[in-house]
Length: 305
Image 1 (cartoon, rainbow, N blue to C red):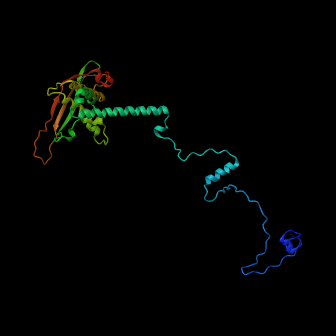
Image 2 (cartoon, rainbow, N blue to C red; image 1 turned 180 degrees about the horizontal axis):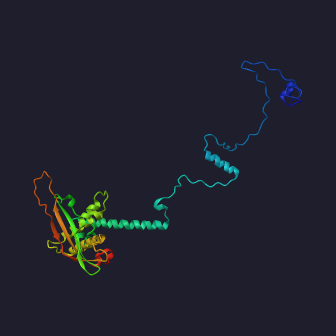
Image 3 (tube, rainbow, N blue to C red; image 1 turned 90 degrees about the vertical axis):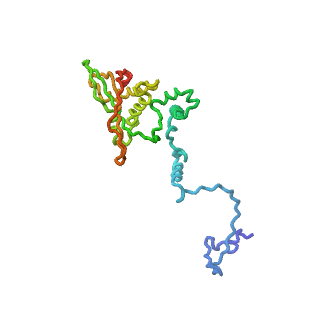
């Protein structure tokens, strides 16, 4: 071992290159592959460094800017609220209601479903052929169906209606001074026709209420206007209430007057055949006049006169 303990000192001495006061070493001649490689002192032995966890790199161009801003906030020591989860969505519809209202909505839907099922079942039994259920519960089925939900097959009849039927009514009114007068005929069918003329969405009442009431009356009365069974009495009450409400709507009684009786008639006119047809029919209207009906308190609007 030399006095300086390194190969560099042994080669160049204490004042050699790299030492204070040493002369600079002249450039070495280039070797075949470039400049000559000088001998360098060997690296001192270092103990192995244990593996350390990788340090995350800072935000780069491809990193999410939200992550970079979150790291900046964390470094500043400010508190950060947790971000909503990726599947957190606001509740809508029935789910947005409280538990009490959800239970109420479920009960309402259940009641509606039960009523719809009962109605569909009643209509099916009404139009179905006679069977054990209709024989045992025919009255309950009729009470449910008539008169609002009556079904018929006239749409598929091979011989459609060829007549225009107008339902008309007049009233006997007692004036405020005690005098009694009879009004003229009110053409209720013509009023319904004017209401739906040009109306793209006419109501079911304007189209069918009066017509179905008259069909119901004719089907349950004979040619002398005598009712046939309980349904005949029901149809008479139904028709009377309709005409009384229509007269009240038209203010037939006037100021201070009271409707005492009403009389209904139908005026039937044949539909004329086309010009190319040789069929001959009468164009004279045919009237069917019903007897006078006294008006009860239940027949007026609200059930009171």
